[in-house]
Image 1: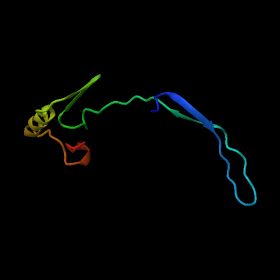
Image 2: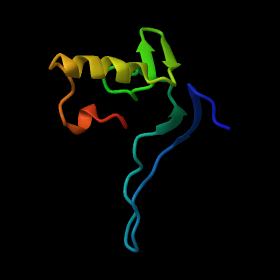
Image 3: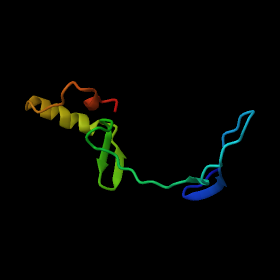
Length: 87
């Protein structure tokens, strides 16, 4: 039930053993930070169409058609894991 971009608690720690306790650390705040991310059209699944602000599933494998056309022209993918259809 945590929400993005919220602060939840402040805490500090210190090390202790049988003989002595150390100094407390500086206070730390547990929080959930919001973040931005982008999908990479060149490494996404072959059925995803990724554009600037949208992602669309293309069950016909639109990207796969583009790859096959490039392979015919000798400009297809290499065998590296980064170009795997599973990514």
